[in-house]
View 1 (spheres, rainbow, N blue to C red):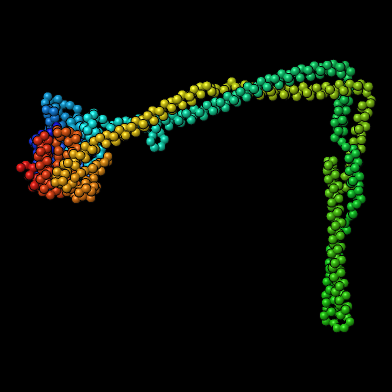
View 2 (cartoon, helix red, strand yellow; view 1 turned 30 degrees about the vertical axis):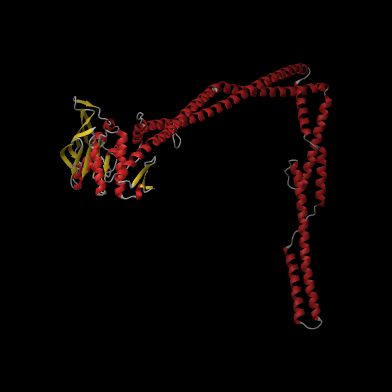
Length: 615
């Protein structure tokens, strides 16, 4: 491919210019700020379009080259030749990707053809690889690794077909990410795991519900057996009750029945009476009443008089002992001791009175507790004792009445049967209640069993299917991961194939430029460059800027040669080699002249020695 002509309608600060290019060397010598780099980037934009996402500092961004003081569309057209056919691409740019217009004409037959990926279609290189191989600028003589360039180099060295590594890796990453994200949770595997967790929980609940329903069924069976036994008991008791009713109804009158009821009441009452204990409690109450002494009413004047006398005698004794001489002082001692004795006597008397009152209160509390145990609410011990005697008399009367009822009537020989009837009647009522409760419980359990919609087998099928799907997804995800690892390994192996060729060719070229002073160049898989000088190898960064430019120029020429062989389409040089001395610059000129026999050279510079390219 060679560039024939460009027309810039509006691009950056350039307006309405047309430039025609020849095959071989095209040299443009203009002063700074003329727009040489703008022309170069116009060519790049015609091939690869513009990036609307980048900031204004980017090399080929819409914001950078939008016309000054204008918001109109900008761009132009470029004519080029490829495989003996002529083409024209027209591109006009706007403020966004949506406003960009691109048309590609086949000038040989006048057809309009697809305008997508013009640079990659005709040069076989991505935009980044184009910059690496075919563009040499003063501020951008660098070489960096990228997958498109590596694929081209590997293909040229090994003789194989070009494979888009980035595209394949992207597809594999998207395929793997569809099943499982590389970071965090997400993808079909995570979704299936969540569904599996829910299905497993549903299966657990279904099994638990099934166990509960089975327990209900077992309980229903137990209820049925219990109910059948109760019905049998009920039938037997009812028959016995009817039999006894026939026997007793023919002998008893209504009056006899009333007597029997009275006997039952008396017997029930006498069961709760304890005549012997009542007799003992009456004796206890009598004893407590006899032992209770009525406390002497407390007289406050007596206590005051005693204490006043005691204090007076103490004071008199102290006065006689202190203020009177002779034998009368001893009388003061006796008076003091007598006052102390009066005080002690008063204290002892008060304690005895309190003890008597406390004893009386304890006896009264015991008597009240006895009265309360028999339900007697009386005021005074005497009234309570009389009530206990009355209660004793009533209990004795109940016993006498019961004995009389048992001995008066000859028909009391049926008492056993009547008691049995009463017991049977109570049993029948209890059996009815038990059967009714069992029927209610059975109804609730039957409703729960009938309402059960849990399907353990269906839930198990769902869990099994999800486990199978999850296993399949994990296999596919793992296969994608393995494929990515194998591709990375294959890429490294390809690097091992083309890097020796680059080192060898670049080393020979650099050695020629330096007259054997620089004897070798080494590049690793990340395109980090090392140069050997006088047997010592150092990173390229430690050498002078001129050596760095010369080395990287050789590198780009070798890359282009490996990619295109002897038919490099064109090379664009934008004011490079300013740091080279005359000797090295002449070597570059010689190389470019030799290269121009088969390659179009576009050389932009502001230095007059660029005229050497034209000589």
